[in-house]
Length: 443
Image (cartoon, rainbow, N blue to C red):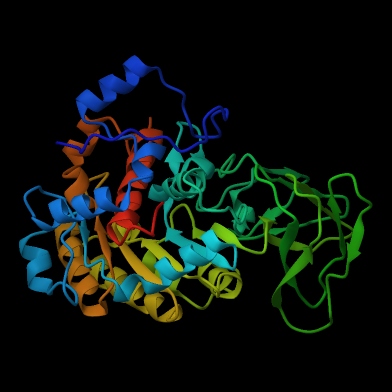
């Protein structure tokens, strides 16, 4: 399996590697390039001149190399998508207008560019013991764009169930996100943590600076009170019940010092339900993670029956999304085989309808394990891209068969989920897509 050689650099020079980032020597890097293992895009590559980008687009439009983006005129017919599959397809000026416009606002400091990731555990690096959300492809994309000069809006909305706590789906979730620490025996609802007594706490320690802190939580009848402590300031009591029905809500503090912050929720009673955190600013680039979850299928994500599920949480808190990156379907096939194909495609189309004001980008997940019905699913996703007129990133073209993926060395120790190199490469593909839509997308 051939990969396009690039070098991944997702942190500013001199910054210590963060979670999921591995420092490698020049010799090791050269070996990876020669072996065809893609580690992403350098800052220098991000800083292409307009002339260089025009040349890149002209080369891509020639269609001479497999996996190169061909700029369509008004979208690509489904027949063409099936006949000549490419890694990037159907990226047009019209269907990326919100993406490009929001990035411009972020760069100018006049607003947000809010990106929402909807995916399963393939969208997180696996280190052999647990999943590493900060090392995921989308956090790497965020870091690469911030490194290239796009102002940061901070952490984005971070799901509480990235915390070190008891597992769901029969799997441990410790430590999805080392920024979150939990004290006490909280109940895990899969997408929320609920206190069982007073004196329990959960702390989010941001790795990025910000002047705004938000705690996402559930107001409910009979909900317990809690305090919020920011850094070394005095705790503030928040009333957990209004006597009414459930309401997903936000506790917000702004005007803080422009530094990283430690935010601690401490319960005064049982039945305090915490959903997530955010530390950042009132403008800039952010990637929300309320929609990525181990074991989630498109069908389950689409359901409106679970008030604490990722679908409801994302629709509530990320209703301001500019861009939806959706990478689902593998678990539908894994659970249901060929019968899961139709369910997955229908659910993904329904999810698109839940965010009508956002640009919507489909991602075909790699066939990391043998999945019955995968070929039919890939064909269906290509057709869905055409019928919805939305961009498509086809990782089946990028990575090939299950055997190709295993031979490329981009799987973690479980031989199922992508490792840090695989996540880096996925990030590089997304950055390629951003560069393809125009010189102003990535500076």
